[in-house]
Image 1 (tube, rainbow, N blue to C red):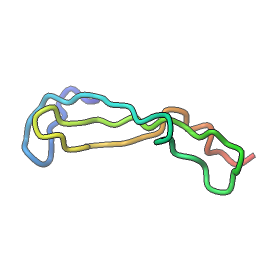
Image 2 (image 1 turned 90 degrees about the horizontal axis):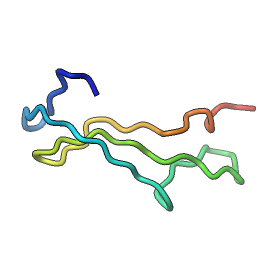
Image 3 (image 1 turned 60 degrees about the horizontal axis):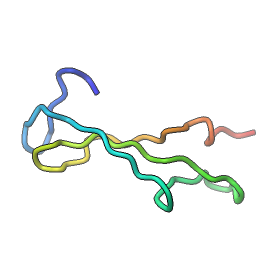
Image 4 (image 1 turned 30 degrees about the vertical axis):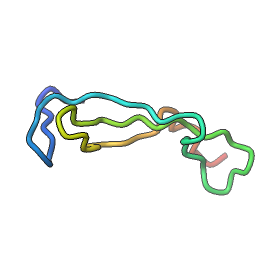
Length: 64
């Protein structure tokens, strides 16, 4: 995350990263057999506010 990142909820500047995986994967809509991708989140280490979420493997969501 950016060096100047700040939590919009509490103003804290220490931001950590987390990963949702396993059954919490995001799967592409309409692709029945796709395994999807884990979700990466930037989290405030003070209050737990989730600042940003994105998929780890965005190429899985492209139309073929």
